[in-house]
Length: 167
Image (cartoon, rainbow, N blue to C red):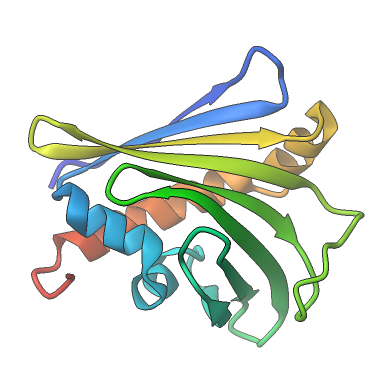
């Protein structure tokens, strides 16, 4: 397996970012890793943290309520509200920090994700376009370690997809 590098490109509006990553796996397998609770929990959080799901319903109008959980049990809650699901092509999600009941934390950044899946030679290219409400919100996410944490997660996903037992 070739070591992959994510590309992070700041939008001209300075409040959006596009992330590209190519996976050595078929689109169906990569799609499943982004849209199936059991697989998401295996790669979404940067180690040693874990993503622990409270509620999961991947469909138009569905959501994922989960906590990033530290080895000591500290929880940071987040929620994704799904829309625009086009199987094996793309989905959109409003993403925000919240409490354990899914109520938005108004002090934290919120953003909108468009996640697109494209066949490219023998790989699947995933393009994530993340748009924040403001430049300050995007900067806060960057300062919180978004790029490093998401890159760690994508590396974990690469490892997961290389296993023959991953559906």
